Image (cartoon, rainbow, N blue to C red; front, side):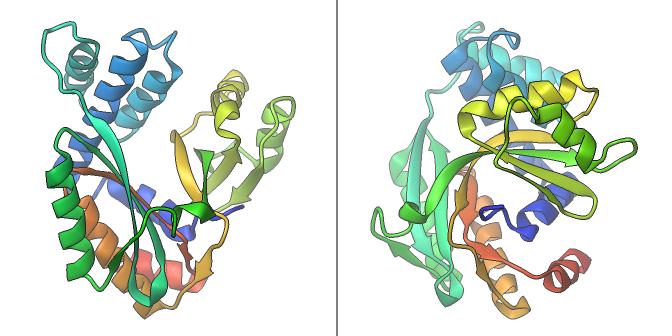
Length: 252
């Protein structure tokens, strides 16, 4: 599979028990608001909103927070903020590529937050295009590996939809699709009785780089610093780790 790293899977599993749950909730709420603003409050007619809400529920975001976010985003309560998406590029320790996605109402504040986190954690900012060329948008669906879910059942469910790849990541299956096919793929899974943890359009690197434990720890510290900012919504990287290093990271 093109670039969805073992650390990305581990990080997803740990996110809901992270001490920074409040920041996670804030980012989930922002996603819901933006999806409702762009596509309206009806989840049946707005698959992006459906997936944003699903991700929130899987992360234990309270229903009241979800409902308020939908109303704010759709302008039903007269509130809401008009966020804009800004992408920054950079390099982490040992030249690891970083693509930093901000969702903000203040471009100057976002730029300052990103630059500070990168430079303080052994990274450097990069010119537009110097990193992004190796990333492409992919639909990424995570499915928990619980009976009776098997790879064969997933293949059977999505056979007519078509997916790029299905990868076994221990206690999860990671399914990648063309971004335009992601909704069809997760709908096919649901129709076959297979639940999914999350379905997101992500930027996946076509040039993954294996790193050792020390480099992985430094890159993760940088990513954590970036994600600690309210302005940063997602951080994508081309670093990957072996199963052994992933196990060491998960044990920390």
